[in-house]
Length: 637
Image (tube, rainbow, N blue to C red; front, side, top):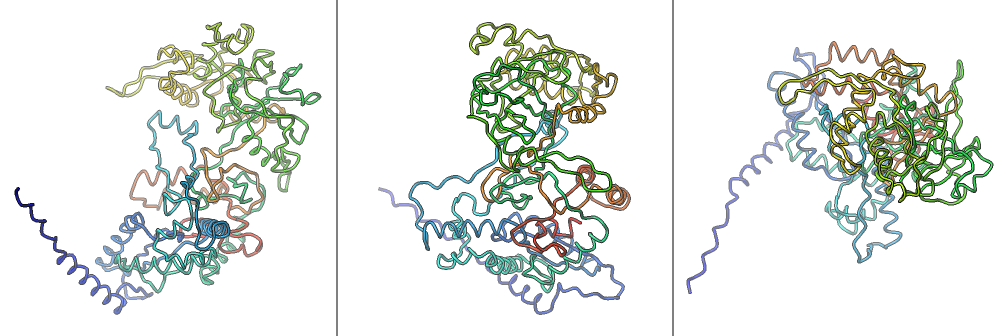
């Protein structure tokens, strides 16, 4: 038997160790000589200021911070070599809910499982995650290849653990020290010094005399933020009132980006709820609503298409309820949407004063269920009166592709301009056995498609990217036939059809019916919406563009909450910033510049206050804290 092969020689680390020793020696010299300390000096050198977005201190710095930091580090080093007086301070962010939520979670674990805790032997539950639902606009943008999807930001440090104690253990904190982190300020004492040491080892050329943390634990930074907010208020850039904000019900406050486990960058989306009145006699599932006006309330982003309604859809297996509103009306919707609606309301303009607010629910935040929950199948065949529709009565039909996690679970049908609506109605009209399966009769589907919008699109592109010209008064039918869509299961083809009809309908559509016939769809949309709301046939409703999970682990809604907010949409302020960006702002990247302009276009009011967490108190109203992005003033106000 041959002798076993000898083990490979151990790899020498001599060169690595020599480099590390040299690095340590040089870094000590830097510290001794104050190499990176910058003072104001009238010595003729040009000045260069470097800043880095404050890393959040609910854990140790990681490789992502190091990668991002290199951009600032290289810029600072280059400018020093070219003779600039370079100032590079460094801040650590502690404001907001993440630290508070983690401390609360740890406190609850210690109370429940002991110190040190003995966790259950079964696998710990997975942290809650948001779904993958996209907004209509994002779907259309992706279909048209006009943008790139952003990757979701990981919202938790210590990923893969469900217990906060375990997450802290993974960061190398001794077990006997972990319980102290149930006090939020312990995080401020522990993680920033580690951040400084890690960055020094990394070789960051920071003036460490100018290192700081946020919150009122640092009286200097606290005073700086208070000063800035006093200036903003003196300039009339801050106001108070109810506004639509992403809201965490369990925390009873707004949920900004830094307060989220997932859903960073997601904001409120405005829908129009169309009131489809149920025609008496009511079906058995609505018997408890006798004597009240009952409405199915689909949420739409396209109110201008309501002239083309031919029916309404519900999910047969979906859970629905009848919820009473403050004015006595009863809305049929999902419970999820009813809860969101109960946190919202309508505004009545008041001359020379703040608008009057009337909550949709009798008691703000409480969804008032009438009777018991029921299935969508119980509504099939229910007759409805649809505002603006050609037909006096339309009926409730089944649609198996409805998502109960978006909108109200009720979908109004406009088969002229919505491919999903067209194919679902087409199948029911042409398949008697399918109708029989759902207990429907021919009268429930005997509705012709109503042409409401002409879309005329010219030819574009060249080669493989070339697109033919097309025109139609019933774009959904046109594209379903062109793509040979046979059923609702043709999901990929339907996605293409929706992209063509929705995008081109907004950009090139012209109204064919109603008082706005001849107007562009883009112009008619807000006008028709306003008319529907004014007539009492619709109301405004908000929900997040896509799922948002708070640090407390619940799915967020949108609520009209009283807030201090920054008036970023004020015309004079916005125009001044836009002019600066156009004339003097060097972004070094066309995409970055486009994002600045896009943000200036949509950002109107920014909720800048919170009821609890860590941070700086609003100077004139100390019951509120300044939220975590608004106190990072170098990249906000």
